[in-house]
Image (cartoon, rainbow, N blue to C red; front, side, top):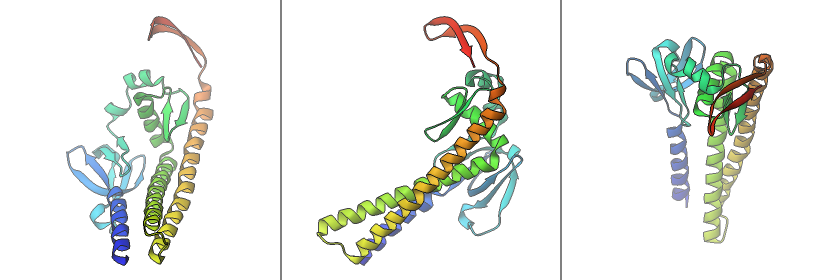
Amino acid sequence: MRRTLTFILCMLFGVFAAQAQDRIYFIDSQVVNAVVDEVGHDLVYYRLYENQNGPVYSTPVADISKIIYHEGHEQNFLAGSIFNEDLLKNAGGQTGTMRFVNGKLYIGSRTYYGAQQAEYVVFNMYGDDYFMARQRRGWGHTLTWLGASMFSLATLAAAINLELEPGMALLMGAGAVGMGAGIPLICSGNKIMKGIAADYNSRIASSRQPELTFGPCRSGVGLALNF
């Protein structure tokens, strides 16, 4: 039983370690496996994934093409692909309302363009807060997933053996702790995201005046009141 418990724990924490790896893509085609600590306005701070207790490196944002974070989120840095007139037009304009929906921020419309526009704005206006929110949500989802997996495995093992051995009780307790720690982190990250959206709307989007536009729509052409 001890060997089984050790194997399960190693497998779960191995998955956790694999998910913690970020990938930084530089404009010269170099790719670095890293743990990103902070994305600032001008610099990105990171540690090498192979030496996470080592020194913290910094590199100009202008030298980076994109970062793919361990939870799957992709952040692009090339100005031409993030912020241009076509993107503004498709997203509804820079002064469109920002919304937080299903873990993502949008400006103007809940589309790919709206998400890219929101990402550009929040990383430039709320970089530290946005990074903290994403970090908390990432840790929260990871801890919740690990906790739920451990709790489910322990429950299944106890049901099969028709008794709760000490090892399974420990695994079940660890799973409950993981879920108990993960859910508040997700809620905290969501709260920061909603606060960013509310602040942006009160400071910028509220200054937008209603306007009546005429143009193509799904059924042909028509009038649209934007406010």
